[in-house]
Length: 549
Image 1: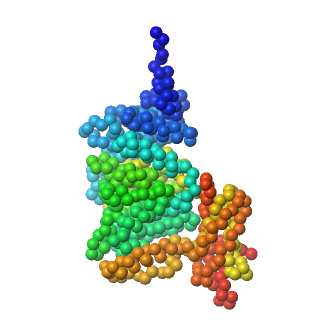
Image 2: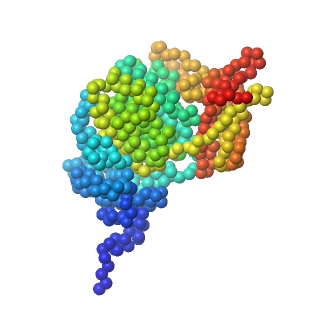
Image 3: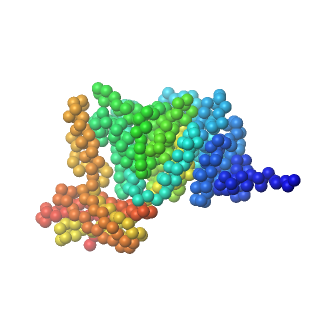
């Protein structure tokens, strides 16, 4: 009888099943892996599709069946990391009940909570962070994420959504859109005001002008508050229109976001039932929750982030807290994430989260003015100002990535623009540049995000009448209507020029934005300008950052 070595049998089975891109569970690949997939056996066959897709991008993947204990899995990851090439860990499967053996679950870790318990949190933090912490210093050394789905069908659908997200598409305008949803902190007027001002400063100053932002704010005094009866509808519509990031700032629970509270009643924002209305067709957002408990993956009922990920039109990934989060550390984490996305070079969401955590804890030279501002805030509203170092380290444990850590970040290419003013040509701006490819060029003359086309009236008294609340909605829509002129033209590869009229009503700080898109290419750019009124000629004068002759 011919005896065939067991290793050859495994290789043959792998070839038949299409397993060549990643090693069979338990087998060490010839090349050192950069990605370890911890995957229960029932999910492994469908994960072959993911392995094949990521391998074609250059990743070397090893897939293992999880050991029976948390400690055994930690040691396995450490052993794989000794090769020196491991950078990413992906856990497939929900956390499950630690008291019940479940062949579809991968248990998580629990670490002692020391600071957030002062805010009323649980005494232990559920976290996957220790799996990525190779030297036990509390900080991750590897990027890590979890796909906490319960069935093969759900996992297969999610993998298809990842591939669609990363594939070229003609509809790419969502890549320049960032939508914020915010509740009221409730920490008191002084602290709430500090948080609100810091958030506004970061959004205004650190998000480049070529990106569109929206703010949906649950304070009835704010012009950014829609009709409160429609708050949930508006928040969901901001999600469904597609955007790079859908960011919630406020309180949260395991299965819901905080309610918007008016003087006479409160209104839902989002919970495990209303997430069924999430139906984003193009540009599934990355959801960021600067909130408590939304990533409590060990809860007996699926947490909000898990439930959202399961929706076919839901987020492509979520970054969220598994326990009570605190404003100081979350603000620092947000600052580092903003810097790394807009100015860094990492390619994946897992690396973005990893670097942001490390810099939040250790400190960085990025944006020192804003970091100093946040440090001052920490002294004011942290429950234990002397424990700020520990609070930051605790948030490295608290924050979880729900989704694929190898998800490739969408970053539009830069589009360099120049602007000149031609008052003799009926008072127009000439926008010029060089296009690397043929496509459709959209040019806009707009106000920057800290201005209004029509300044809203200040609200000093709450009026619950139907007409007053409908006016909330009209005001909300006006605050986001900042574009004065739009023109779209086809352009070929090479130099382009387009003229934009200057409306008689426009003046002061403005921005010229450009967006170029084709079937497989997308780029954006902007130039700040200042338009002054010349009383003699009644025509606009233009000032840009450079002297225009």
